[in-house]
Amino acid sequence: MSKPLSIKTELTTDEFDRLCVFGERFDRLMTLEVRPLTGGLPAGIVVPTYLACREAQGEPSSTLAARKLLATIRSGSNVLIATGAGVAPKLPLGETDGPPGAVALARSLALGFGANVILVAQAEHMPAVDACVRVIEDVGGSRGTISTAVFPKGEGEGLAATAEIFNRQKPAAVIFVERDGPNEAGHYHGVRGDRRPPGTVADVYRLADEAKKRNVLTVGIGDGGNEIGFGKIRAAVAKLLPQGGRSQPDETGVVTITETDVLVSASVSNWGAYAISGALAIALGDEDLAHSGDREHAFIVACIAAGALDGATSRPALAVDGIDWRGHAGVAELMRSIAVSANSRSEIKNEATASCEADLPIFSVLEDAQANGGYHL
Image (cartoon, rainbow, N blue to C red; front, side, top):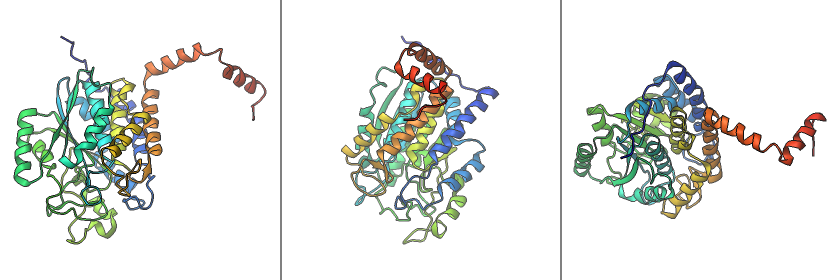
């Protein structure tokens, strides 16, 4: 029988301070405003929304989420990650924001903690989730697992599914990545204020309500205020949105009322999930838990092949929220670089590698250039 993973569940003051330094970097990256002006979110609200989140929580969002997960999850723990957004006719099989972030974070939890992660989505969104799971090759040999579960539409069906999931899985934590939450009237909206047609959105938010009753940790990751978790700063976000966050045609609010214990507000929801993975990579001392640019590209390709579309354009483009895949791969790789630079073992390994490469021509070129005061081609 394999030996259980030894996971440090509490950080020392020095470790916490160090994680916060890198958490600031992750948070800055995940809140870069890169979307085109037609990318859905009103220009200029990403950072103010993040700052409202920061004021409510007091520390970098990626740090807080990683710290809470570290204190909660053990080897063999069950963790729910719910995702999926978009409805017909524009996004009949969902969008490319959500599934990649959910699966990347699931991978980090399975590899880092030995957790059993259940990815939850309504039926229309599951093909993209399944496609991203198939991209991952390194979880099969880990102590953790990743599986999927379809959450049904309908009030009664949703209540029954929630009870069954909690009674059977007894999750240690529930995480939401780009998942719509209802407003005060029970309606779902896109960030542009468009109301989802009745019956098109499964009541996945009930998982958050049940978790609160059972004192189970919840983490919400979103980008526009309509996703599960933003109930935590609802009034602040509503003030930032056009028309005070009122929707059309019913004039109720766009921002959800559903709260989570931890809220991660990002420019793109996937990026918020990647920031948490990066923070966990540092906290657990394993850079491989961080997302990568190559995996990001593969995720986006997999989503499009499964029928998901770019949420900003409703087109089968290799993009997320109107941003080309290269931009997303770049953000993922920068976050991975932060995790690598924070890992002392990586620094030692890199120094050793550099010493073995001292004979490469590039080093003699650089030495000559330095000796001559610079080298210009």
